[in-house]
Length: 245
Ligand code: FPP
Image (cartoon, rainbow, N blue to C red; front, side):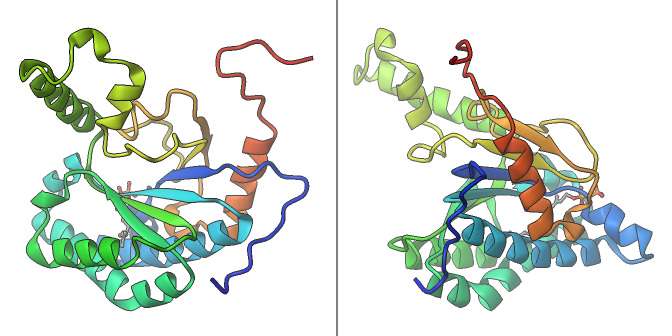
């Protein structure tokens, strides 16, 4: 892996950063451009932030690219977003893979159209042994849907006698989620000034720190990531315990 990770002395770098990439549409309409132009600029921001995350020593970067609710957008926007996933992987995968990036997904990707599905599956498979930044793309993802799907799986295992209801623990439940072997996000960033969770990583965010910025996603860059990481580093994470003295 040629990408040199920076040794950060002062900042406590979050191991797992998750981002709700919001504001593409507003970025485009401010410029009199179609919404899709905002999503295109969003892909460039994503590439910048992958780079910046590698540089700062973030180990896991999860990005909310397409929610279970996004199917309700106009068909040309949905198809445009699917095309952008294909475009991003065709253009950037080789380079990212050379840098050690491992691509993963969370969400029900089986519902994606065949071309983006194939590109995504190929990317996940071809990068599975990479040891650098893990880029987790949330696609057709919804936190409630994830919890319901996990519950159905556990209920089936109970009915078949594989596990007793008493054996259901937080850890067993976590293992039934898409994020099964991923650490919970330490820092969740949402751009565009909206202050809500929008069905993102509901279970996994129990003890995450949130950072909200007015910047629109296409304007987000390395400096903006550092601002978020600095805010995170200044927080006192107690996980429900009392402060150590
Ligand atoms: C929210 O902005 C953004 C999305 C629903 C899509 C995010 C997608 C990308 C950044 C590009 C594609 C991703 C990959 C992985 C290639 P919005 O459209 O809701 O913005 P608005 O609130 O201003 O309308």
